Length: 241
Image 1 (tube, one colour):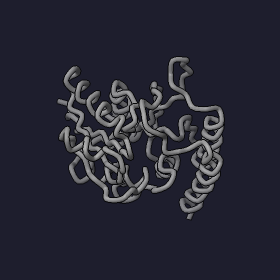
Image 2 (cartoon, rainbow, N blue to C red):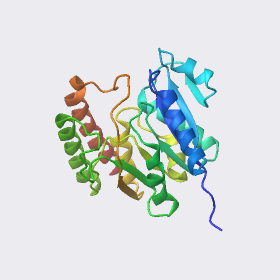
Image 3 (cartoon, one colour):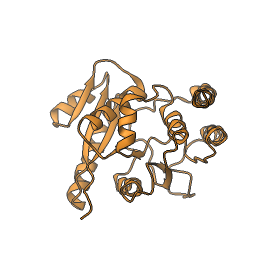
Image 4 (cartoon, rainbow, N blue to C red):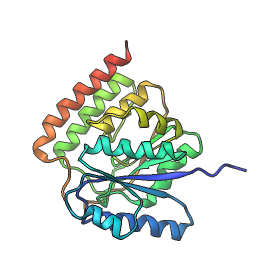
């Protein structure tokens, strides 16, 4: 009899009063409809709006950070929780309504079937006019980051900044102790590929934000891209020592 995997959805949230309850409720409804048992931990990353109040009022399992650690620190907090509570698979899932819970199975199945150690939900493997897409400038930045990741790891990654991903038990432990605080998605992907963890990228659909504001403003795009590339090169240099 196949062991049933213990799966948790980690939701970092910063000023998500417009989205967090709906995001959580869609997971609860999915569990009821599909007889799944995805656990949820919301990491409230020092929000200054009503996010904490909403989490308390609705008795949503969460961790309150007393100050804003940024996406890297918030996500690592979720991985620490997953590690300390013995989860087999952790799914990183945005609190802003962009990710679709229907695809959690899509990104966890390759791990359950031992086809991959970590899985990225990608917007760019399949072109779909109904899929929410990024701006042209950001897409160009993603392509450039993808080029450097391949240069360093010999592995093509299409959606380098996707925050919709799943990892196995070994990686949960690794991330609980070592997770990048800046540019976490592309840098953590580079680290894992250097360590020879198996990656699978699967197509998913994403939606536009329901409300609130993205943490990366357009004015930061060039700065973001340049610093990610420098960080990838630094990871490569450390890996060669």
